[in-house]
Image (cartoon, rainbow, N blue to C red; front, side, top):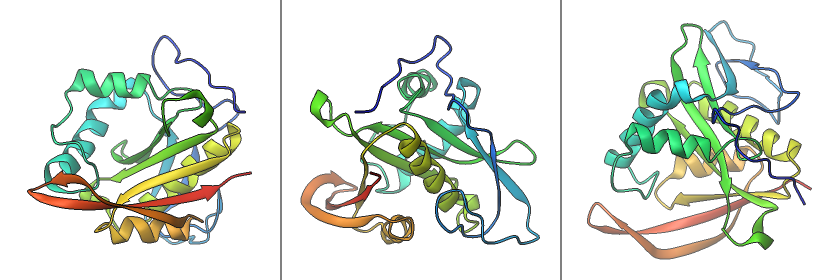
Length: 205
């Protein structure tokens, strides 16, 4: 059973013993392994802080308003985003991908899978990349890193719940070791249509 630390007073995320990881653009192969040493600009993955909240909020709200990557219907306020991050400190971490100029390219997070205590060994992942930076390997680097964080925190498995139309996200998760374990039929409604959700899982132990 993983130990779930309480959020620190600042609400910033820290992974004990983990240094910032640097990734080249391009795909990665497995946890922490970079197989594309291309000449493109690098980006790094680090724990998010509350100073990142507005940039994370802008990336997320673009998906709220324009896609079914999230089933939220109302954009988050800055205060709501900060609270969301405070609730994802310690084992429930938030990570960001940052380029050399300091621009946040995307983020990933771990959330409780369900509220009841017996579900605590399982977490749910979220990965969002700014639309201007899709295709650079940011999403795969973020998912790889957040799965590694879940394993280091002692979680047993990671769940992803993805819109059935989110084929790129499903492919990303398959590439990172997830497999489809079921489908939820017409469980959400957004943009005046019913949405099926694909459930994917990666075992960690």
